[in-house]
Every structure is written in C-alpha cells, then in structure tokens.
Image 1 (cartoon, rainbow, N blue to C red):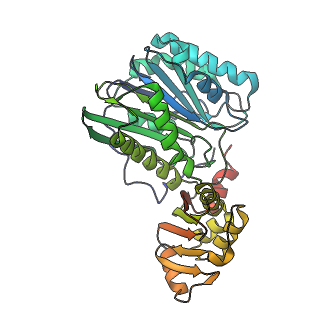
Image 2 (image 1 turned 135 degrees about the vertical axis):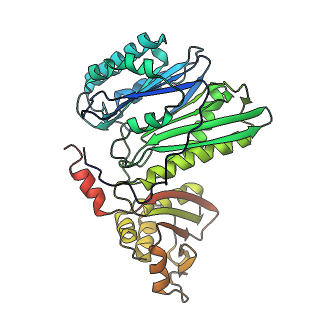
Image 3 (image 1 turned 60 degrees about the horizontal axis):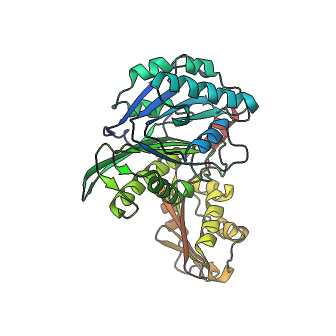
Length: 409
C-alpha cells in the first residue's frame, strides 16, 4: 500500500472531541491484517434495543462483507448489534473464500459478545483480490471485547484508515422538544470515491430513539444529498458501506417529522463527506460544483458530475488555471440537455462566460487569483429551466498517481 508521508493540506486542524454516545462502545487493535504493528481492526458494540440502518454500494463486484450486511440490515431485533471492520484488505473478488471469512468473523464476534450472528455486521477495506487472513482478526476478538470503551471513537476511526492522511470525525448535539440528543460518527475514504449508494466506510451513531424504518428512510435520503454527491476520481468502490445505529439511550423519540434532528444529522453527513473529498489522494483544492438552470434536477446532477469528474477540469484547477473552456467541454459531453449560447459560468463570484462567449467584464487575472484559493466554487447556469444540483470534488495532481502507482507495495 502506498506510503503516505504528509497530511492533506485541506485537513481539519484536529480530530473533533467526539461526545460519548450512551449505548455505544468501541475498541481497536493491531491484528497484522497487512502490516505489522499497525492498528487495523475496530469493533463497535451497540446495546440491546438499538436500531441499525445502512446504505451500500451497488457495484456489481461488491465484496462478501457488503452482500452479508445487505442481507441482514432489514432485520429487527432487541439484541443490540456489533460492527467489526478491518483495513488493509477489502475481502473483495475472493470468491467463496470471502464468504467464508465473513461467516467465520461473524461467528467469532457472536460467540464473544452473546449476539446473534444476524446482528454482527462486517466491513473490510484495502487491497482487492487477496484472501482475507481472517484468523488474525478472530485471534483478536476477545481482546477487542475486553477493551470496549465508550470514549474510544477516535481510536476506532484511525483503525479503519488506508490511504487516508487523517482520521475523519464529526459530531453535534441538538435540542429537541423531548430533550437533548447527540450524534457522532467517523469515516474513511481518500481514493476510489464516486459513491453509488454510500461511500467507502462510514459509521454514525445517535442516542436518539428512532424506529428502524424511520432511521433507514433518514439515512437513505440524507445520503443522497451528501455522500452520493462527492467524487474524487469517478471510481465506485466494491466495499462502500454506511451504517448508522440509534441506541435510544437518551429516551428522546425521533420520527421523520422531526426536521431539527434531520437537519443536524445531515450536517454530520455533509461534514464527513467533505472531509473525504478534502483527503482525496493528492488533493490540494476543495471544489464545489453548483449547477443551476438545468431542465431537471437529474440533468443538473449529470452536468455537475461531468464537470467534477473531468480530468481536464481537475488538472486545470490543480495548475490554478482558470480554463473555462474545459467547463464548456464537460457540460457539452455530459449527455444532459444544454445550449451553448445560454451558458453562464462563474469561478466563485467572478463572471467568466455568458451568452456563448467570454464575458466582456472578465479579466484573466481575476480568475487566476481566485484559482489560488484552497477552496473554489465552479458555478454554472445552463439557462434551460429550474433544475439544480451541487457536487463536491477535488483537483487531480501528480500525488494521485504516486499514491496509486505503488498502492500494493
């Protein structure tokens, strides 16, 4: 796996001080899944009465872990739940051996925790196509259970990193009519980011009391406005998994009608999603692509992703070149409806092009100055309707090549 020598320049100043979520405990160990002496397995245990919801990759080559989680996620149980995650090996494209690894790990965790195997969820992330040495993980399960602690969320976040240059966490507290509830979570992701249902690995927890059906609806809808709107390199992982647990420990009941809770939860989702982009392999710029004026929201999303995924757009941004012609190209190739002579393009607040030509007021030095900023907005109005969409991405630098050229070494 590529050697990461420096933290992304877009990284937050520090990992947040995650609040204790009553009813959730964490532990992590070094199991030697791929490297010796590196923390690479984490276990999360949710108390009885917790509900769990999730979204997963729709990749046709998704891993054994994802398939197993999908088969279990709809079940209701008062038994609690466990989530065990390893880094270093994705357990994807490993045939029946991958299924066997998942079954063996689930059985070991179930035995150690007293949970039914149907309430043990697994994730694996790392190299594709190599058999998972699950015996190394199973050998550490008792140690993980013994080390469980409500305050170890930060350690768990670090255990699931692969090419990430920093652990990603987010949290909030929201006051509701029934009382105060907490939300906290962490994620990993850096490359192979173009989510199709979820993104890499994300785990979010709340002490609110939420039915499984309502929790699943919230997770699915908010995911579509957050993780499903980010892209680093247009590649969808075989392992994409987002799991959320609601313990109910606060005693505060939350339903789909509680907009304050949904807004707070969306804030945590967006925070983590943006951190994934800011840790994009080799990234030096965080880019927001806003498309308005499309015929439909679907068309706007198509245009936005075409811009965000274009290597030519991304390399221009890396080189701090305000090359608006590449935006025109990306819109034109997207396949969604567009009219050359109705396009309006802005870099931030700088009007660059309108009415099918460069804006008379545009000065190249203004565009160049804006491109030097670490965070850049590309704003495109299609001029055909009311459709709109926002996508977040990063630039494409030589660092991306360096990281991925020796990823398996």
